[in-house]
Image (cartoon, rainbow, N blue to C red; front, side, top):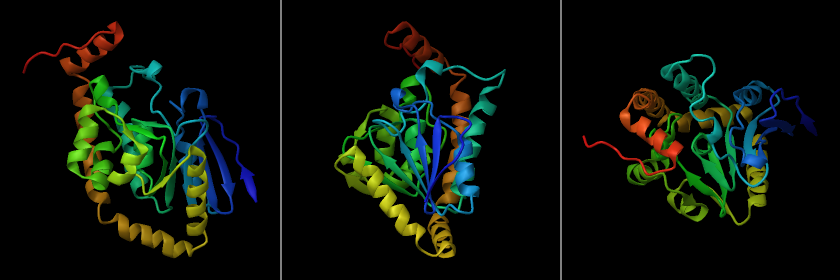
Length: 262
């Protein structure tokens, strides 16, 4: 049985299939950049009929992060700290959720989109995937757990490479490093494999599944949550630096940045 739930924001589609909530980023023409709706995850976690959650992307990509045409825009006169804090709290709260989340990653997963995949409990990836923490290209750093969650998966050195270079990692490398738990050959297979895993878990005892997830999570969640709070402070500080202003100007003027010596 499938139930299509009404979604006030088309950025994320919601579907319920036999205990599995399928949340789909839905801006395929933009590689799902800016396809964001925290209420979709709230709906899935609070729905008693949902046992497992799958997050995926419509079109060719999982989620390519923030829409770069909107960089620097804010609602109202919100300050840097509050702007970052909203996303930070969402990620920290998500760490303590009890329902397993499986990410089906294909195409681009960049910045916040990549961090959404990292926040999942299990990741299925395709060989065509291109993963990147691109924030340093804009003079800032990840602020919804990228530095912390990635380190738990691949260790400090490889995390530093991704965070400090902003370079892409392909699907094969992501699997070899431990970002992906399962690797499939084609983008279409990511959905098939993710749903297969989700249905298996959904068929198990809900109480045992939730307790099992909690037992594993308690090994690292507290440290990750604390690290995300440090990301908030670092990001807020970076928004005020001359380096950030120069990077923004260089992007706007389409030239290499020129940073002052320290």
